[in-house]
Image 1 (cartoon, one colour):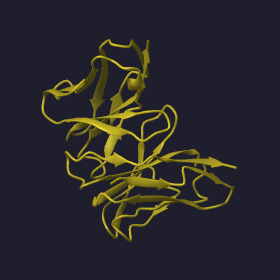
Image 2 (cartoon, helix red, strand yellow; image 1 turned 60 degrees about the vertical axis):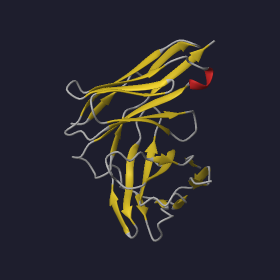
Image 3 (tube, chains in turn green, yellow; image 1 turned 45 degrees about the vertical axis):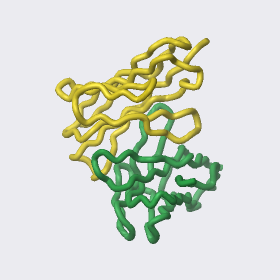
Length: 114
Length: 112
């Protein structure tokens, strides 16, 4: 079945540690996104990529990094510079970034600080 | 600025009809999306409106008035499984390309 796979489902980070969240899609979508969801807040865009080998900062990119070396994969690294990383992280993809293209989401990774 | 407002919580009875409102103020407008999100799960796409009027999809309908900056999601014949958060999102061409601006979501509880 086609879809978006995020792993791991739960992740714990120690102080000063970088951690990487995986996102893989087999929908043949060009565009991929990373969002952060905090309780009582809307989803906020961290990074997005319209095509392989290209990505752009979203609204809250500080303390995060991404790569897009393959169409199917868009991993997110939460660096030690991100001082408040505890959140629910959602990866999404869409056929393109066209206006009427809905974004399809993975099941999310919940990141906590040890 | 950019702002999307939705009620925080709503309660309704199984079998009833509920309307979830969304108002938005954005620098531009290129469509509005509704998503459903069960607790701890991924949001799933429900509907898309870019022109004024009502779009119907089974038990769910979505309405848009661009002049009023207003949309609603109408859920009919409510079922217990409809208990979830409903997210309103606007595509603003003035923002990061492809960026959706999300409201905080409306948590709907359906009671027997």
